[in-house]
Length: 127
Image (tube, rainbow, N blue to C red):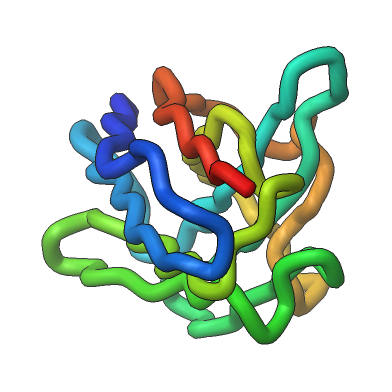
């Protein structure tokens, strides 16, 4: 599975940005796709994820109510609509795929649960 993220850029605080991630290669009918981010000097952290085939989504508390994850399963593409951006949202945003999401309910939040990673796209929020 290959993942290609795009759509990052520079935006002012309070603004909006949409990033997308397209998957290619062989996937099953049930898998999860997630967004993570990594700010300079910090560890990679969970942002949002969705399980295709179950329709469940999950968000980090820090972005809940501001970010919305959606997707087009037929196109194997997910989107992250980011509104009310803050300076602390500045990071490289990575998409990832978990090909064995399990049946616990919500998608995994741990980086080690994801099998494939995209190259990342930089989001910079100026204050």
